[in-house]
Amino acid sequence: MMKYLQRLGRSLMLPVAVLPAAAILMGIGYWIDPTGWGADSPVAAFLIKAGGSIIDNMAILFAVGVALGMSKDKDGSAAISGLVAYLVITTVLSTNSVALLQGIDPEAVNAAFGKIGTQFTGILSGIIASIMYNRFSHVKLPDALSFFSGKRLVPIMTSVAMLAVSLVMFFVWPVVFSGLVSFGKGISDLGAIGAGIYGFFNRLLIPIGLHHALNSVFWFDVAGINDIGNFWSSKGEQGVTGMYQAGFFPVMMFGLPAAALAMYHTAKSSKKKTVAALMMAAGVASFFTGVTEPLEFAFMFAAPALYVTHAILTGLSLTIAAAFHWTAGFGFSAGLVDFVLSLKIPIANQPYMLLVQGLVFAVIYYFLFRFIITKFNLTTPGREDDIEEESGEEQAGGNKFAAMAAKIYEGLGGDANVTSVDNCVTRLRLEVKDMDVVDQKKIKSTGVPGINIVGKNSIQVIVGTNVQFVADEIAKIRKGK
Image 1 (tube, helix red, strand yellow):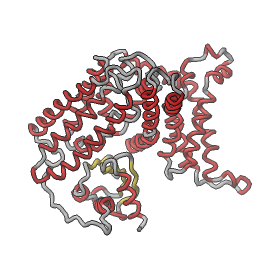
Image 2 (cartoon, rainbow, N blue to C red; image 1 turned 90 degrees about the vertical axis):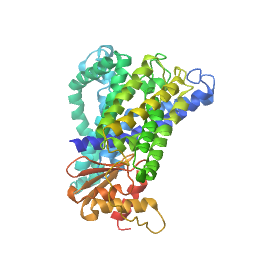
Image 3 (spheres, rainbow, N blue to C red; image 1 turned 180 degrees about the horizontal axis):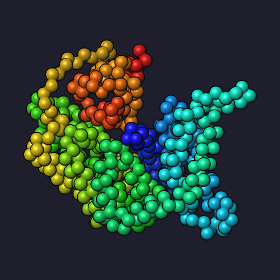
């Protein structure tokens, strides 16, 4: 079950990664004309509406992305089936269709059906489509129906399956929707404290990749909050809209880079050079783009107490920003790029104060991390027990990713032990026959931030934002190139 949920979390990263495009388009549009939706400038209106088209259709992107990511072959027909699934359920359970089925006036239909086209429905559609693909993509029908065999059969079976799902959702969705709304409202009614609670659990769920599910409640239109969409559309209440985003900027731009500095300063002298390279790359990624996984995974499992401290500080940051009504927003994550783009969004409120808060949090993170690491002798990067370093043989051509991939693959046990290789934004996700064969010391000698064993046969190697290049090199090794 955990493995399946992690695959789902990885699949969600594909559609989520589209958000920077919306942020850039809308951010530039508002820089040109910050008076609203671009009424005073055709160019601004063009950019703002173009960005809005992505934000407004995230549910469809979720359906396509999850179907593609969860299918065994990552085939395009799975993605089409995800779209088909979404279209079926949102049409059958639209307000007008439900009114027709119940024989009542559309205005009397439960409000839940007016919100059927949410990210929740998109994710569900993608999951169903991937199941249908994995089950029917290689089915051969009798000769008379052979045209519809294999992958052509998947959209058909998906449509049938979604009719059954729609029947269930006809009764379940109003209950689920009410629960989501109640949960969201329960947190939002707590104001700044609620924002802090959300921030705390947002970080705690990252290790298992389920933070995306929590984010969908507050960032998107699952429970009516839609913090990201409303912020970039400049809708809602100034000083309030964006409260579930703003507090991440002080943490990702200042707090985590300061934590990286603390881990560098507490590393063993003999390992400072290696740790410096790792922490510099991870810190810069966190500051500029808000991609925090390379840094967080560096201490998440090696020093859980530090990670809980980080989660608490994140919750505190969101509480403070929300309490003072300092707001800014992001399309992808809370890095410098999104911060600059959000400055001209009309609904942003005193965003520069987040920089002041960030400087304070940098000091807190640095001294608190340094104190905890030294006080409890935590094994953060550079503080591990010395291991015998193997001579690093570079492959011909000096391709560092090829050399890194070769050693990681060898440490995993090679062809005899590795059964599956995949990757997300920052991690290699691998399946092995025998975990006892895996040589973690050899893998760590490549300088990777960390290793995460997530099951009897499942292991993750945290590489960083260059993971795609390493994954490609491993794919070449497996193909015998």
